[in-house]
Length: 371
Image 1 (spheres, rainbow, N blue to C red):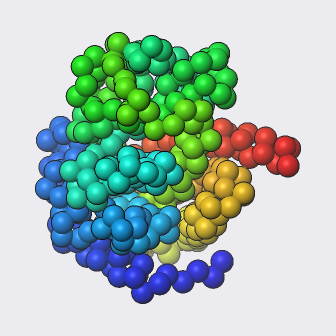
Image 2: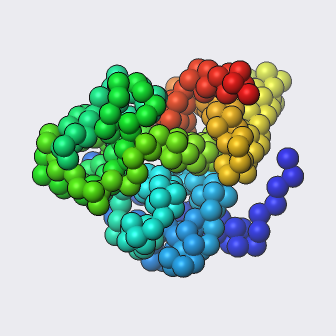
Image 3: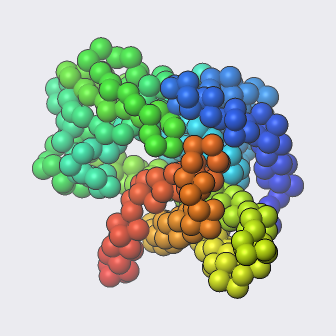
């Protein structure tokens, strides 16, 4: 695939890359992880005020940079290269993406806060029994009261708002009768159990008990098509993050193979290691191409199929490249002191975030059969 970035997109990438290289090195990131909060508020404000990247996919009318999905792809790949902890995906891609789809007064009220860094959104959609299925909902909104449980809600501990899916009618797995809500994270009746993920980000089990929800909090009724579109956009952005992670895993492993000596020569001189590194490179390049294709098709009728193809490919690449990176490094590849192990953790989590390889292969098969 021949794809060239515009001058503005290249500038966005280079600006973010320089900032992360200067201020977000491995040691600085580890201090944040050990701090137990799962993010650094100062970095988030720098993203908003110094770099302006929180406005990358938003119209200039909101004070953004006038970009879209490609700009999200550029930002997310660079964040993958530094395994950034801050909630760009949940706030800008998912929260901001939902606002762009909904439009109107609510978008006018929320998007400027996202761009300024003062509004942070956590996506409370998935439930323990539903796994990857967005329509499998036990959380209910009845009589203006929200009740239920959302699992592994990343960034909920430091979010100002929760983007919540809830059933307003029908059976638990019906496609209809699903509403999308935006509610204050500190609303009465909301409780959380916070923890750190293996990757180091903050996540929560979020419980709703008779939370009062007004009409102003309901973004859309019968919202499943909108929710699926937003999650597809987020999945494409996640694939871009994975590409950044995988590029670093391959480059780091290649450098190590040139330096590590065994039997009097660098292990990279052995043909079996060379073959493995070439296979890793091919997996990375294929993941990059599939991610670009999915990103470019987000506004077409082929969106769902393209995203599922990309996510399935990226999931396989994450497993292959991550495991081979650790194997070439040997025992030190899984130590806390070496960065490669942390990139491997992130690659492993990405395999299943927003759907596993099997889930997306099955989804693609269903789309193909229905066509």
